[in-house]
Length: 285
Image (cartoon, rainbow, N blue to C red; front, side, top):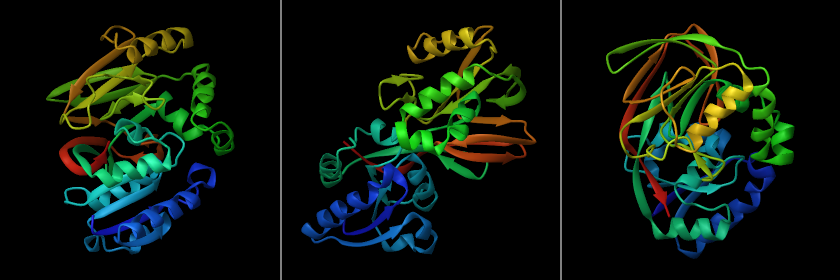
């Protein structure tokens, strides 16, 4: 860690990012590390080749915007979690406590993680359509500001009362599938609600494969029953749900709103998803 780029999302963490940035800058000064600090909005102005490490102050959406710059390079990414969900930080064992997060960055332990490309965008965590996307994309910011990650739980209950099915046509591993579904989740990391639950204990960020979950039911009670089976790892493919693992997936599509790592995305045209194994270097606990 000789030349560091500090990227701050000023809107993250109910404005805590400003205080966290001061802590990061003090940490780098104390170690005599050369650095440059910028806002997330100015990231496009940076020549990433000037740096060996990027420290992101923000949440999963902040990380998602940095990934395209450092994928398939030797640049390392450290995270100071300061967002709504902070799922990647939780997966890497990085706490929201700023002092402890900086201690982890100081130790410089790394993992080479997978990234999957969704259309023309990148994801380290997961992408979702249907119900999963509604929770992410339609939860009001005011609710997230007030309740933090618990806002998604509240929205999840409300959106489950008005589930909509859609016909999806997809291909994967040379197979074709037609399914009427309310929710599709494509996951590289399966942890939810920090690390309290996971949609698959087999879902690892460095195993070179994606986990795909499809929930078919429209009845909210049956939907939650199936979803609980997934998070308690009692999943099985049946008339109400499907689960499979693959390295590639194509979903036939015209225009659909979904999410990638918690950020709203409007997909135009077929959604093509491919895994890029061990293509990004992350600092972990």
